[in-house]
Length: 153
Image 1 (cartoon, one colour):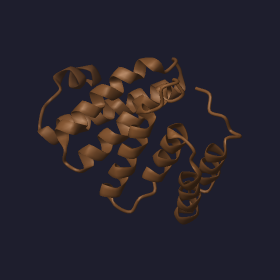
Image 2 (cartoon, rainbow, N blue to C red; image 1 turned 30 degrees about the vertical axis):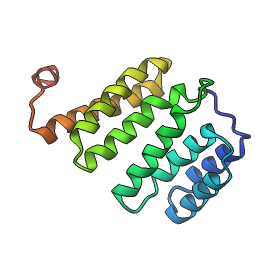
Image 3 (spheres, rainbow, N blue to C red; image 1 turned 90 degrees about the vertical axis):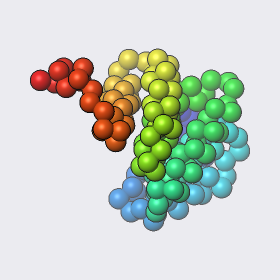
């Protein structure tokens, strides 16, 4: 995945991540990135980081949905490798809002888009997040996933 570090939105988001321990300062940088976005690609990046710094689950969900919506509107492939993670984030937000059917659909879409990621650490990280989301969905529904239980025994 190649993200241009000289892109102004990317640079502001990187600066925000660097001060993540100061949520107000990070949020201000992410909001500035949002305010200067020029296209759906940049909007998806800024919205993704803004979602992480919202005071309520409802606002987090709104920003996660916005990040995903903008990413799916990019037609030149620049966001292809973002989609698994963005669907995962939306799924997490849906589950937090007790929308298990929506969370299930998002987890399935995240898993579908996982194939776009090259093998390695980032893909492993996203895949682990999808598995955790799927387990939490099952737990929220009261289902038992015997296959996973047997695999870990």
